[in-house]
Image (tube, rainbow, N blue to C red; front, side, top):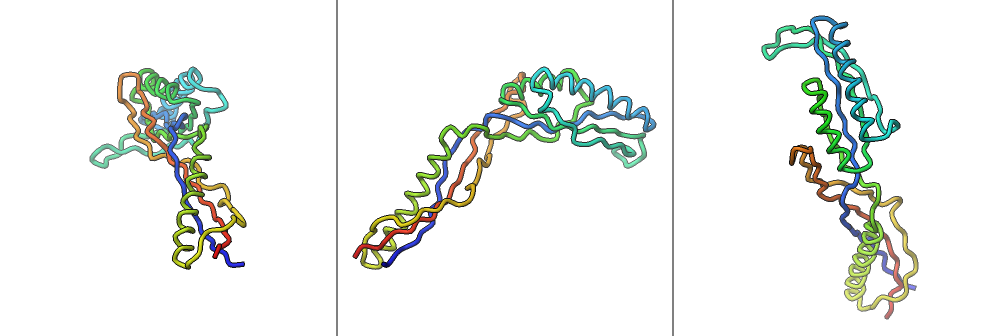
Length: 202
């Protein structure tokens, strides 16, 4: 039995529905103790605000650092302390509201490092990507079969790549589109590949 084996790729779009905010409470002072004290007060405010918008288990410390600070001309200017956090929000509206509240209540002691958009519900995008991958494989296989003077017979095997590729945000992110600190979800792309073996029909 002669066969043709082809790998197809399919994609589907889905909107991110959650966010992970990476930020830090920052404090400066003439000495380590002063910088650490200012940072600690800011950190307490960060946690207080975060817990109004997300669960406690979604708020995690990722590091505390203290180092000599310098001004714009490179001269020593006391010390700077940072307490870094990763805060996950179950939806974008909560993340936007939290950012606005943090900016208002923590102010200049807040440093926002990044906001990552994530997909927790694919809303059928995985199935659509899988179907598109199969059609892509079938079209490629049919072309190869014609070149060999044959047609496509029955499918012998279908193998999906392990886990495929999860949603990859190609997001358009607006941290401050309006006064509420709105986040624009843009879209994420889910990609899947399948390898299909067909019997050649002569």
